[in-house]
Image (tube, rainbow, N blue to C red; front, side, top):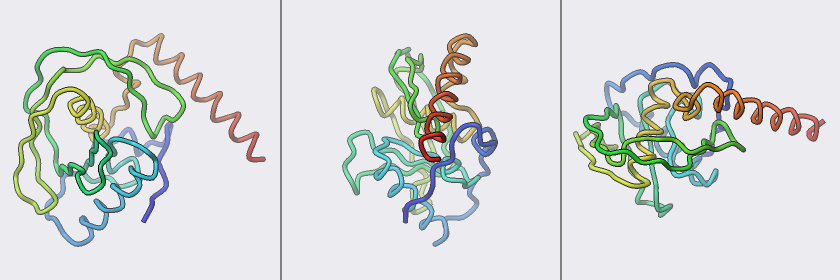
Amino acid sequence: MIAPMVKEPDPRLHRKAVPVTQVTEQILRLIDTMIETMVVAQGVGLAANQIGSNLNILVASPDGKEGKELVLINAVILGRRGRARLAEGCLSVPGVSSDVVRAASVTVSGLDRKGRPVTVEADGLLAKILQHEVDHLQGYLFLDRLGAWKRRRLLRQYQRLCATLRQVQL
């Protein structure tokens, strides 16, 4: 099932996610919906709040291979190493992107889709995705990682794009 994407300025994107206490059939259905939604949207990562859930769940697929998606429940970044500047965009803020400085590699822990503890060591694109999605689960967008001037400029660009799309739809 495909879920509608929650987009900026929806307040659900700015709330901290609630921990998952038990992996139930409902949680597994949510994970499947997140993966399907991410794939259809041609994204490489998705946090649950991006489809309206307040639960601490993320999915990631840096190589886009179906069936190989990483699922992390109650994800926490344990360690960050180095620095990398990479272009970043977001399914919840479509049409804008910017270079963002993040850690070059990260260690992230959480639970897998079976509720088992897992620790992931990641660098490159996967490290960026995990940091981006954990930010979502903390109530932050990639725009919040930018300086005030650049953030305002991108938000104005996004607002103009949204206004144009609304006019086209009328």
